[in-house]
Amino acid sequence: MLSLAWRNLGRNRRRSTLTALAIGFAVMVLVFAMSMQTGQYAIMIDNATRLASGHLQLQAADYLDNPRLAAVVEHARDLTEILLADPAVAAAFPRLATFALASHGERSYGAGVAGVVPDAERTWSSLPSMVESGRYLAGSPDEAVVGSLLARNLGVTLNDELVILGTTREGSIAALAPRVVGIISTGIDEFDRSLLQVPIDAFRDAFELDDEASAIVVMAKRPGEAKALAASLSRQFAPLHARAWPELMPELEQAIEVDRVSAYFIYLLLGIMVTFSIVNTFIMTVFERTRELGMLMAIGLTPGRLQVLMQAEAALLCLGGVLLGAIAGTALVLWLHDVGIPLGDVSDELVRRFHMPTRMYPAFDWFDLLIPSLLMLAATQIAAFLPTLRIRKLQPMEALRAT
Image (cartoon, rainbow, N blue to C red; front, side, top):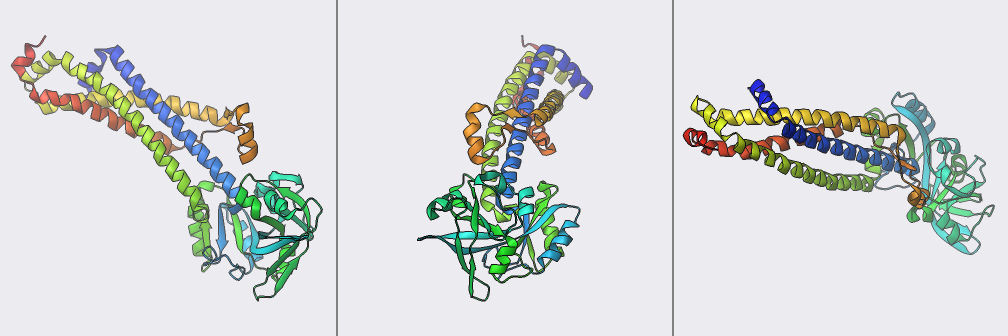
């Protein structure tokens, strides 16, 4: 049956070639578009995780629902060393966080005060690169960096002194008086309005803490495996809980899912368009081969077997097109993954404001190759099946008289 189907495709090589090229082009476009999506999602996740959360965090079990200073991770230094020994972990460092009142002169505003390890943040966080004026923390206990909107609200500039008032776990007053050494602008108003960072040792001294952390931030060597790593660490360090970035930033995961669903709808429309073009090809094929089909029925082939023959022709045609499209799409994606797609001068403001890369890079994923191939295979089989329904209505004698 396959040999007969292959022979039939060769009888009109131009039409078969054009149909295969149409399928191949659709596959190439889908592979490229899905790879671009995957690449953009990777950039979004990298920007978001380096800005704030890390790929995952080791926290007290109830910290996410109630982020208070009392819900801390004990023995943070020992846990950090254990995490760094894990081959799946690229970096691990503690952070402390609480809400406090920041004052300068007669102005006071609430702020999210974070105690950080400056060296680790400079290596793994994107915040140090977003310093608008001044510099990032160097480790001195009397330093602080603030968000640009918080600095404007407080009326502070570089080298001004801030007064930070909060409460310890026991309810007593905690106070810091650092100098502003840097002003950070992330382009995210909510973030810039509350951002206030001090060295973690200064935070611990002021809030009467020793070896505790609100969370231990973990950067995975393979960001795509953050969920699996979080599940493994949760089992290892129970009752502490490791939360991957989708749990820490559900709005980002939801945005990605909404974008992915809308894109899949467009891909489906492309598949339908290709299906209609293939339907037209097989309608012409059935009409042109009516006499041949009548002869085959006269010598004993049933309509069902003739339909199987047409489906086999469609499958061979699709496999050829999918192979061409997959090779072309993969080559294009791998090439652009190295050189990137320049965004041009018009994107300079977006790049500066949202700290995006100046080039877009697609990311190759086997899933992005498999889905277009399966979609085109299904579309081709449906496109071939619909015209072959006419075969069941053919009568051998009438078909042989067809001109």
